[in-house]
Structure formats: C-alpha cells, structure tokens
Length: 292
Image 1 (cartoon, rainbow, N blue to C red):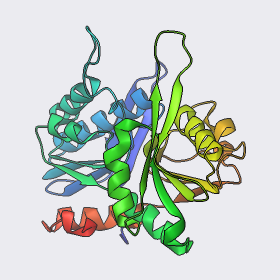
Image 2: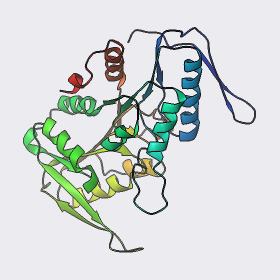
Image 3: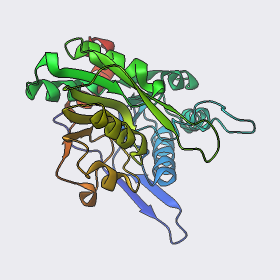
C-alpha cells in the first residue's frame, strides 16, 4: 500500500495480561487493524480486542478489523447437544469491542458472515492460487479438481470453474461406527490426471493426506494440494512432506514458521490483494468487483 505501519506498543505484564498503547494520534482516522487470529488463537484474539478498544477510546472515526484467518470459524453450528457456537461468540466479541467493520479471508463457511451485526468484506484468496497454477502451464485436458470431503464440494466446484472449467472429483469418506475404520470412495475419474485438491485450510492434514493416497491408488499422475490457511498443527508437516504431493500451495494469511517449511511447500503472498481491498474499503468503492 506504500504506507508505514502505525506505531503501537504491545507488551505483557508478568501475569500474562496484555497492555496496548497507541503511539500516535488516531482521532478522526480510518484505522485498519491487521491481526490473524491464528495460534496462539486466544492470545491473538484478545490482543485484537484490546487494540480495537484502544482505538475506539482514542476517537478513531472507523475501525476495521482485518482478520486474514478467522479463528473459531469451524465452530459455526451445533452438531450435537450442549455445544457452543463459538464463531458467533467471537463475532459478538469483535463487535462489542468497537469494530465498525470486519475484513476476513476465506471464512470456513459462508454463513459465519451473518454472525456479525456489522458489515463484513469477504476476501477470496483463490485468485492468488489460480494465478500461480496458471503460471505452471498444466495442460487443461490433464486437470481435475478434487474436493477432499463432501463438505467442500461447493468450494471445489467454484475453483474448477475458474480453472478452465476443469472436471470435478470428490473424496467420499464414511465411518460406519465408533472405532471402525473409515471407508473412502472416489467419485469421479482421476486416472492419468493432474489432481488439484482444494480446501480452505490444512490443520493436521489427515483428511487431505488420506485423500491424496486414494488419488494415487486410483491412478492420478500428480497431486497438488491448495489451501488458503496453513494452520499446520502436528503432525501436518510429516504428512505433507512424505511424497504424496507434487506441491503444497498455501498463502500467508497465517505466518508460516521457518521450522514448518519443507521442499514441496510454496507460500503465496496475499499482501497485494489485502492492500487493494483496504484501499477500496477506505475509498467506499466496490470490493466484490475484484473477484469478478
């Protein structure tokens, strides 16, 4: 964006409490607080809340929480009794802290946007990945886009449409009872194809690694893994670097620690995309037109 970062002092007290003080005036300013709520999730979330509160009390005109990775997004509904819908709770906390707007990248499920009572700009990072894949010049006749589970079919279908309208395959995973091995079936043809697996995040990489093994069994020539959020909880690195994948393509919505790099990993920057979105929000211009 060609701007300097705002000056802010963040430190911890001896008991772990977070202290925030702005080091410059923000009175009447349009403030954008950039903070992914990635691990340590609770620390980063609380830090974001306190920064929002500090800006509100310093008379900022508008406060936008820019959250490249929205933690707790997977807890977006009740699947069993007596569960919390933590995504809604976190949305309430951000709103109550004083944010006027949220800008987030690839939230786990679209309905989570509705949990906010303030405007939300949803940034789709798939375009960064699509541009990179286009540069690899893979023959469109060889491509097949794969959803690693049934829940991600809509995401994979949209990705396939933008990738030369590539055919779609789905890994169907079923568990027939407690402590019973899951049965995996493949819907679609991947024989002698370059399979591109698409998901919004990779956490422990269990689902995507098992899916990749199935694709190789079904005759896939190469398997690429693409995701926006590289959570990479153990043992993700071991699973991703064991030779199943030709390349693992992620973005830097979550900072990837140096210890988590491996030869097949490619990290793409979303800086330009976020910068363009922030300018458009500031200038009251259309954001959705970026993705058309």
